[in-house]
Image (cartoon, rainbow over all chains, first blue to last red; front, side, top):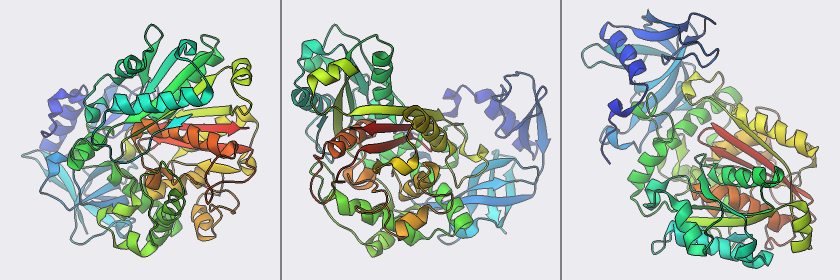
Length: 133
Length: 377
């Protein structure tokens, strides 16, 4: 099985919006002009009210709160060799959440829930992940 | 009803397994192929079986050509989707009699490849690319549940221990081996806190039922089993967007609809088959189905209330954990199990005596597809 080719996916445009933000050192959400819903990950179409008018909003959180956490020992093919790695859902101060990897040492999961995670951005790649603080 | 043994079947195909289950179902119902007006097929992943459009191959094997034949898909709830397709045809009067078959072949590819296919059933754009796997999704749910309600890893392990205990008595189950909490705790960590023995296995297998109208059912059988209600619900595909990861609200919504249609509440259910793809999912199902309040699902396991003889026996088949989980077969397998229990045909050691009403909860992904079906004698 070959690693996933992201260009295959129809919401590539949304991925591009997100990646452009990362290059500038920001995360990006979509704000619906009609119903004010914030979408993270960004969307091209508001799945709450059906509007196609969404603004791209950059934000620069330095940290967030872990709301769910695991350590993956058997990864999908594209992460083969990187296991084990931490995977978390993090909630930022604005209430938005995202799934991402977290650099942690030991086998941890539920123990991490409720703790603070620092956001790390790589503007070159671009990529993002978390570290446990 | 018909059911193949679940497990590893290296020398067969999804077509042959499906045909075996179909023939058993038709034979048991005394139904000839000329009486079958449609064939509703559930196979979740053509990719794992190497037969990308399996419905036609199953129809061909059975000589069921000329009638409507196609496949329904809802990830791990594919079997229930196929059942619903037939149900809707019959309820609307389009046909009287349908043959429903769910089947899957998962062990013909390497486990690593299967892991990849399963992971890609979830959101691929944002979550798969972060390294999320199917076990990881449920591990995230487990972590939120454990933090919020002080659920322990041993509680999760107890679900697997219970389900293995009853699978021993189920001839079609993949595992005929009891396990202990200690064994679960010591098994390989897949996605912490979920260990290998918290996870349902990859399985090959098929299950089939004959579904027909009320009039025809009374002619065909002295002991028909009725679908009293079928509730279906869905939810968003991005796990991180959910407000409370310790719950799966689509199960609750599907259950509410099934209870409303059947006029039966959770207190009137004599037994349940629930979707224990991972042990945490069974605990969450108790809570969403209304067997316990949120946060109190573990009490049922700790007190033995979901054991045979308890308040509501759950997964007397062995569940997905120990009976096996050939994705497309599972929803139909639950219908077969409900039928056996309601007819008093379930084997000793796992038979719920005098059961009148049973519930089956089948879920695709982390609740993106939720089905709750209520069966009665």
